[in-house]
Length: 216
Image 1: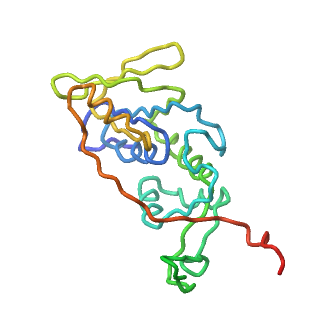
Image 2: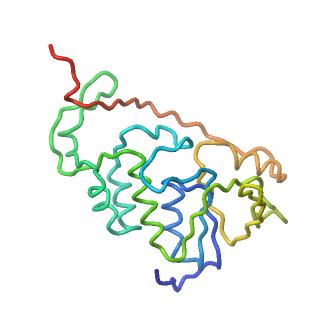
C-alpha cells in the first residue's frame, strides 16, 4: 500500500482483531508506517468460531452501509464474501421483519444484502488485512495496562505468554468489544469516572432453515 502524503506518525496500535479492529487497521494504514493489531485470542487459520466473539455462531446480515464501507477500505471483499459462501438477499423480498407486532410487506425495494456466518465474515476480512504490507496481526497477546504520562497515552503493557512487552505508538485504537477496559484503565490513570451512555437495542432475531419447518 502506498504511503499517504498526509502521514500522521510512525506506528499505530489497534487493540482487538474483530471486525472493528480489522477495519480500523485498514482505515489508518495509509497514514502510518506500521500498524500492529493485538488480540488476546488465538486466531484461527480458517473460518472457525472463537470464544471471545459474542453471537459468533449466528447467521449475520451485513448491513448495506457496512458492506459499502468495507468494500471502500478493502476492495474486492464483497466478491470474496460470495466466494466463501455468503448468500445474497433482496431487501425486503427475502426478509420477514416484524416491528412492534406488525409484519413488514415483503417486496423488492431495489438493493441486496449479504448473509453469512460470523466466522466467514471475520476470516475474509482478516485475510484481506493480511494482504496490507504495513499491517501485522499479533494474537495471544493481552493488554494489561495503559502507560499514561502528563495526561497522554504513550504506551501499553502487554503480555504474550510469559513475555511482557511495552508497546509504544503515535496512535492507539481500542476495539476490544463490550467491556469496561478503557474506563477502568483511565480511572487508574487518574482521569476519574468516565461518563457512559447506555443504549438499548430493541431487536430480536432468529435464523432457521426454511426446509426444516414441520409439516402441517
